[in-house]
Length: 157
Image 1: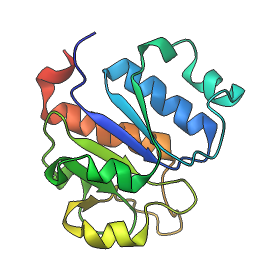
Image 2 (image 1 turned 60 degrees about the vertical axis):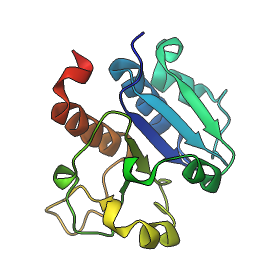
Image 3 (image 1 turned 90 degrees about the horizontal axis):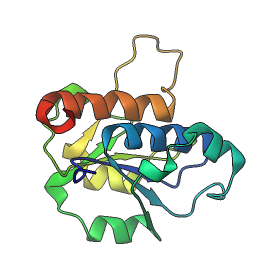
């Protein structure tokens, strides 16, 4: 396999099928997956494995014991945070190889203190219906990842 050009980070994911679908996405695009503990499920969960089907052997997964440990090991300019709580659109960001696309847990999103600390690195996926709070985590990750890949078209050919 080629070295991974991009990274998806899930902070304390809670729903196994979302993580399984994102793992499958990562396998298909040669994207590294980072899972920040605590996880809301066991990695042996049958729903997690079912969503990833038989692609798990193609997924590079790194586990982190806390979000603080993850953040302290990264270069700030490589971090992109996604939330419903800002106006900056994900298409306004300029993604480069080695970047980290960071998504919060399904029920709460990313911690408020992180959003405040990295406000200039936070982006959203706009929605036109005000009655819909957010998109599904796996769908959001896919949309953002493919925008990053589009901007760096040579990464996935």
